[in-house]
Amino acid sequence: MSDGTGVIIAGAAETGEVGKLPGQSTLGLHVEGALNAVADAGLSLRDIDGIATVSSPGPVQVAHALGITPGWIDGTGVGGTSFLLHVRHAVAAIRAGYARTILITHGESGRSRVGAAPFRFDPASPPGQFELPYGTLGPTTTFTIPALRYMKEYGLTHEQLAYVAVAQRRWAAKNPRAMFRDPITVEDVLASRIVAYPFHLLECCLVTDGGGALVIASADRTADFPKPAVHILGTGESSESPMISQMADFTESQAFRLAGRAAFAEAGISTSDVDHLMIYDAFAHVPIYGLEALGFVGKGEAGAFIADGNTEPGGSLPLNTNGGGLSYTHTGMYGMFAIQEGVRQLRGEAAAQVGDPQISVILGNGGMFATSGVLVLSRNGR
Amino acid sequence: MRSKPVPVPTPETKPFWDGCAAGELRIQRCTDCGRAYFYPRPVCPHCGSVNVEWFTASGDATLYSYVINHRPAPGFTGDAPYAIAVVQLAEGPRMMANIVGLPATPEALELDMPLRVGFEQRGDVNLPVFGPAGAEAVR
Image (cartoon, rainbow over all chains, first blue to last red; front, side, top):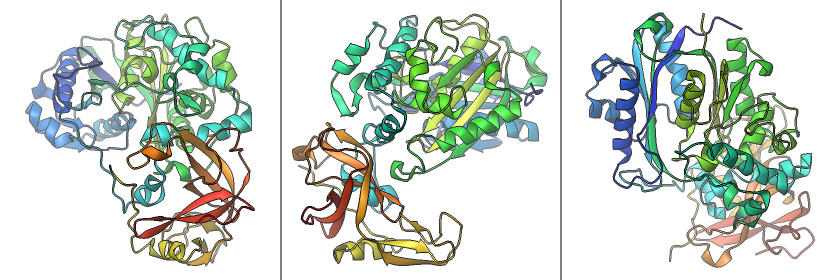
C-alpha cells in the first residue's frame, strides 16, 4: 500500500432526511448538507476557503448562499460522479497549497423538482441530432441500451440481472433511511412493469430528493477534527462518450476501467485489499460492469458472482451497503451518497456496518457510462 | 400534443443531413488511416488526423443492441412500445436509430440480424431509420 495522498475526508454528512422533501429546494439541500458536513468536521463556515459542486446551481451560488468567499473553485459538472472528481481535484489543490479546507456539496430536488434546473435538450447538439430524434427519454432509454449486447455476449440471464436488485434490497432492509426496505425476490423484479426492455421497474433507480457534503483537508490536521479521519489513498477519473451509441464496446466501460486503474495504482492496492465497495447503480447492470472494470471478477462473471450471494449481507465483498440507488436513494446525481456510505463504513457508523473495514472503494458513474471517478479510501494513512 | 424532436444541423453535420435528404447515408472517413467514423466531426477519432472526407455508406447494417421503450418520449405516444436501437454499419461505425417494419418485440428483434437503411420525414429533415434487410426500402 502507498502512503496515500496525504489528504483526508475530515467531515461528511447527508441532509437530515432523504426521499420526498417537497419543502426544500435544490439550493436549500446544498446548504443543509454543507452545514451538516462542516459541523461534522467540528468547523464553522468561516474555516472554508475552497468550494466545489456541480454546474447547477454552481459553486458561485452555493458559496454565496453560505457566505463563503473561496480562494479555490471547482465547478466540474460531468454527471453523478462529479463529486468523486471534486474529491480528486481537492486533493491536488490542498497538496498545491491553493486551499486549506475545501467544501464539496450536493443537493438535488430530483423528485419534487423545487428550484431544480429544467430538463433542456439542444436539438443542434450531437445528442440532439443523433439520439433524441429516436424517442430517447433520459437514462431509462439510453443507459440501458448496452445490456442486451452484454447478455448475448456473456450469457447474463434476466434472472441474474434481476438478482442485482434483490441483493441490494437485502442491504436496504438494514437501513432505516432507505426508501425501499421490504425484501423482494427475482420473481417480484421480473413481475414489475417493463420500463425499457430488458429493464423492469425494480431494476431502475429511485428518483428522490436529498443532499450531502464533504470537508477535505490535509492529513497533517487529522488531530484537529472530532471524527476519525478517512484517508484518501488514491483517485482516478476518465470519460468515454457523451452519447451511449458511441460507447466503444457495449460489454465494458472504458471510463470505469481507466479511472479504477489510476486509483488502484496511486493507492498501491489490488482488489484483494478491498473490504467494502460502492458501485454507482443507476440501473441493475451497472454494478456488473463496475465489478468487471475494477477487476474483482473476469469479463462475463459478475452476474453469477452477485447471484451467488457474494455481494449481499454475509458475502465476501459487501457492495452497495446503503441499498444503493436502486433501494436507498437516487437524487439524480447519486455519487455523493456512495462516498458518504464509504465514509460511514470506515468510521464504523453505517446502518448496515460490515465489521471493521480498512479499505473502501467508490466507483462513480456520470451520464450514460460517459464519465467515471474512483476513490480508494482507508482508515489508515501514512 | 408535442411533436417529435427535429434535429437541427450544424456546419459540421450539414453534409450528413444533406445526404439523408438525397436518400443517402453519407458519413466520414479518414484519408490517412482509412477508417470510417460517425458522428460527423472534423477530426478522425481513430488517429487524430484532420484529413477526412465524406463518402456514401452502403446503408447495410446489423443490430448491435436495443431497448424496447414502454414510456414514450414527447411526440412518441402513439408509437409505444418502440425500439431504440444502436446499429452497426457495414463500414464499422455505429449509430442510434429506430427499427421500423418489424414488431417491437424481443422475438422479432434478434441481435446481429441484417438491417437496411431507410429514411423517415421528420420536420424539414430526413431521418435515417433501419428496417429488415431485403424488405422494400422504408420511406
